[in-house]
Length: 231
View 1 (cartoon, rainbow, N blue to C red):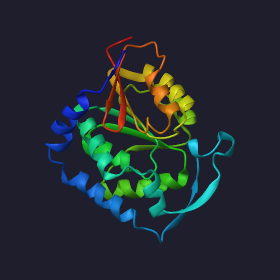
View 2: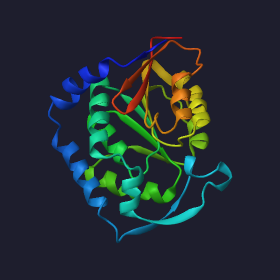
View 3: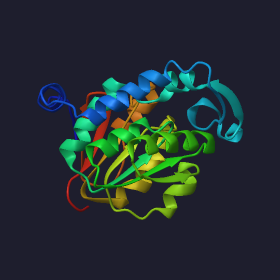
View 4: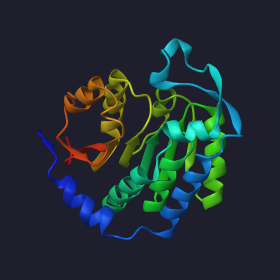
C-alpha cells in the first residue's frame, strides 16, 4: 500500500500545535535541558546498535551525561510529536525498543498513563539512569535489560503500539518488524523513529515485505505502520 503524507500538517496543527501540552510534558523537557548541561557527570556505557558491528557490542566507553543526552535522547520537539501521536492513538499496551535515558518512555507514559508499558534497553548503565528518571515522575514501566533479539521472544503482547528507537540498521528494522507484526493487536501500529537515519533505513521501512494488511504514513519525524484488522 502507498505512503500517506497528507495527514502530517493536519495532525501537527490539530494535535501538536493547537492542543496545549500538560505540565508533565513541559517537565520532561526541563529535565532534558538540565541533562544537556550535565558535562561534569560521566558514566561508563555499554554500546550496542548501529554505532558498532555486532561482534563489538557490549564494549564500554566513558561519556558525559550531557553528551549522551545530546546524542540520542528524545528532545522536547520530538517528544511533543510522540506525545500527541500516542495520545491520539489511545493504546492500552505499549512496547518501546530502545529506552536509552528514558525520555521516549516518559513521553509514552505521559500520553497513556494507565497503559501497560514495556521498554527494552541493552545497556545496564543506561537502564539504571532511565530508572532514576522514571522515579522522578512516578512512572513505572516494565524495563527489560537485554538486546532486542534476546528480549523480544520473551514478550507475548498483543501490542496496541510499538515504538522503535534503537539499532538503526536496515536489516535489523526488517527483522524486528517481522517479529512484531504478528504480536500487534488487530488495529495496532508501529512507530519507527529515525527512518531517515540512512537511505537504507528509509528503503527498509518503505519496502517492507510483510504479508499483512498495513498502511504507511510519515507523521512528523516518524514512519508509522498501521495494521488494518486481521491478516
